[in-house]
Length: 232
Image (tube, rainbow, N blue to C red; front, side, top):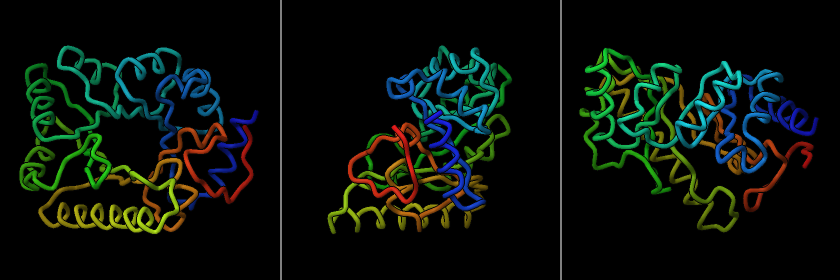
């Protein structure tokens, strides 16, 4: 019930145009990803995110019918499962994107993808050294469908002046990349940047999706200012 209330209160808080990608990685942060996802699905959630392929397969087999974004890379030996289960694969570097493309061509598959852009987190993501034209050519391949682009804030859970400035710098870098991508003919699809901390700490930063994770469980991710009632 608490999970239901947290999700419903979050949906009420968000602008109408912003939907949730409910992050249930790491076994739902230790709270049983399958049960959490099923509860959220019953509340109306239609999009989920996980760290790895096997987490996504477990959700699909348990009855999750919505979209599932895999945030980490899937190894070549298991790429066919992306097509079989209709998952969305994150592409965090251009070499991986072309490896995914080659596999898709060999097996006559079409893989759904989101580009992840590195704006300062430095965990995984396409850097500014990568040619925007290479990314355009990759996105235009018939065996890949680019459905979205995203990045990840590094310090959105901190209120120091330096970290606030860095968060807005990341947003500016993301916006600049999106503008450049559109200028060269990339259909960037849906955009998402804010995870749990940024959703509540930076309500002025809103895109097509947000990615609540531990937020749905009512827990803090560093310093967080909740604008609505949450339950743990």
